[in-house]
Length: 327
View 1 (cartoon, one colour):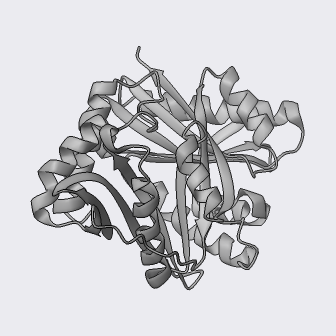
View 2 (cartoon, one colour):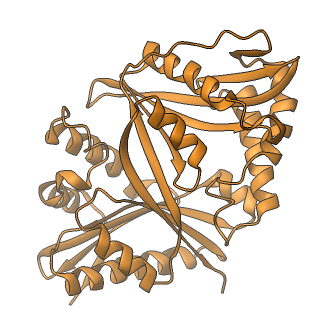
View 3 (cartoon, one colour):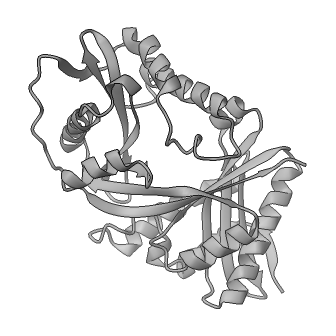
């Protein structure tokens, strides 16, 4: 019989013993020790048990630990779409028996949904399933059985210090953003996306997604949401942009960079503008971080074709799921 409990420190110690390397964030980087990965994971998960609108649950059969799930409310997405948006941040299974695994996943997700629906309704759930996890096929099938919609697959590429030659062009200027660019970037963001996770998801309104991306762009310029943003300018008009963040992970003693978002105006696409923005961002990563990651959806062929041509490595694929509970 499956029983589900709220996470506590005793259960967290059990998770630390049971969790496999392939279930841990950044496990794809072979030079990172498994103990480092575990410490990073545990330190991230530990505070969630007491943070508002964070939920962390464990499943047991008697004294046997079977699984762990956690979720957190995304305030920015919730405000923009008009209903509570929760991201499932972890879904770990500690049994290799398919039927037991399926029952565990169902038990964890049903209890998570029940707890959140007691507080919010409608509720939107999203989850990103790393396809490098050994039991991703079991989780994938269980999620679809629980009416989670498969949206698409996100491809994440990585860079470790590579530098690229920058194009010399009189027409195209790549520079860092300034505050005066905010309005132009916001307008560009509102009409330039087809392959964002919001636009690919049938549960979400495209117009509200456009507004969210526009607000996010403004926040990046005015409020320092990102650490760097490059803009592409042609004849004094902004044609595109690309932004990134960096973070120091103490457990790894590394700085890791993440490409945040890019856009190129429809009238400028196919002219190599993204590739040149990408070159500037990759060179910035080379100067400022130890590892950099950037992602795009499988359907966005021009972008991942650019990265493949530059010799960037494919780090992982992540299957994106969502579910909207209205009543």
